[in-house]
Image 1 (cartoon, one colour):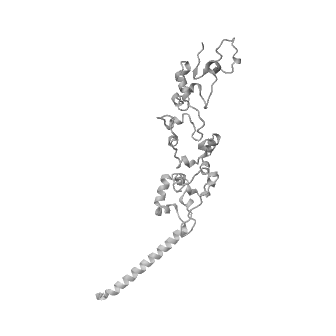
Image 2 (tube, rainbow, N blue to C red):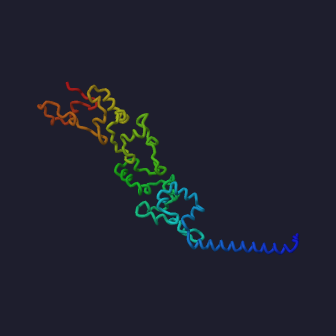
Image 3 (cartoon, rainbow, N blue to C red):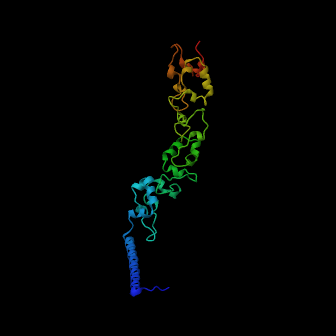
Length: 277
């Protein structure tokens, strides 16, 4: 239906409508020119927060050196549609170490905005990759071969920084044993067969592996029965002291000790000595 305006007001409305259309058109043109001008000026660091606040929050909380030493545009130099170089290769910054020569960084570092916190539960068995950063572990395992040295790192460390309980795989020697107790003898998890009991180790810790010796000591009436195992057996296991280290040459000088190869030829078992007549 055609609207009829009295007194020529219809013409005025048409003029006003045309004016609004022209104003809106010029506004759009100015916005296009502004956008082009901004694109030509290039991206700025503060532009990133306009569309990517979550990534910036992640960087601030868990980004490590990526948050303090690297800017967004250092890794993302371009942005579509202006350019396609949106993500730089890790090796542009990370170089000079064997670890950085490994391909597929995102296999482990799932999120570059929190590169260490996002080291994920790996879906593959890994060893070489781990040892490029933890070379000392490889050296420890090579110096003391054991079953541990045959395993992949991820058999025990199923996520980065995780240290499993010894008792998750190994049955305890004693009913109330803790992980801390394990390390009183097995000083290094990557070389568990290098056994060196602590100087304060109670004899009860020796009994599960040395039951006969423990029973002999319990049954002896000699001074040896009052000593702790590590009093004599101190140092790397199995430490075997000489009798004369404590006793010297106790017999009269008229006896020629050199004719006796061992004190135990006469005194029997060190854990259950035969007394002198």
